[in-house]
Length: 358
Image 1: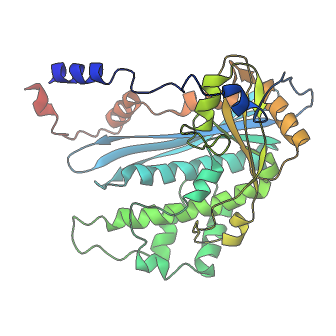
Image 2: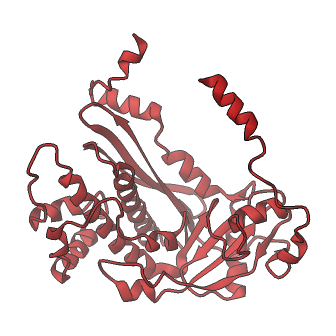
Image 3: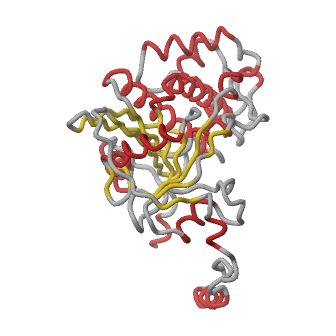
């Protein structure tokens, strides 16, 4: 079979086509990208960054899953806070989406602790908060009627009460049981438990997003990849176009009119989320390094944007924020980590892949 794949690879050689040579790159970049020197802010400020991770091991009867998040604060010295847990989850098609929601809850709770407990002036998220808001409701499982019929102020108030009292872990399991929000599955093979958990975790995430956006002047979302092409309207993402066709330190035109899509659905705070205007731009902090996409969850002026860039640049290494990179490296849960956790927990299950070594 490999010989056949080698032949296919030869046939597909160069199938990712470069931008046509006759394309006038300079005219496309004019007014959209500006080479400029980016200095470093001399202000005193406290900055932090966070990231999350999850990994899993599939067994015949279940999945062993680990989820965690970490925030790193710099106020003259490095400080860390984290939260994590281990879960036993059945075989469902939406496992990654479920774990992604769990991870997001941990990330947001760590971010809120950093802001509230350490007086953080700026907090950097890895990824896009606007993207999270565009996809607030899970797509992999239908919203159970029992939850739909209880999406009222009583449930919201209970979430808010518990989240204000306990900044750790997941709040929804206790709420689910207290409010009897889950109908018992009719068979042992039912995925209903995970379906309920998927939607309740997404509700918890939305409530936390609303709380973090109360501090939106402190929030900076940074992405290394993006499918957005609103700047050039080209057939490749803007960030890829800029990476390929610019090399110098600089930034893009500022878009301060981004909003959540009108059709986006939210279980709570619909008017709040749809009333937020995002400022989006691209920046390269160092010559010949990657272009980054930056989102600010408010309408920022040019001077605001320039100052944010200078503050990000203070603790950047090789064109990327050091705290974000450190948080990512610290929090990643590797396959080796999963094996170690299984050994510590004394879990010995079969995956049925053992037969491959017979």
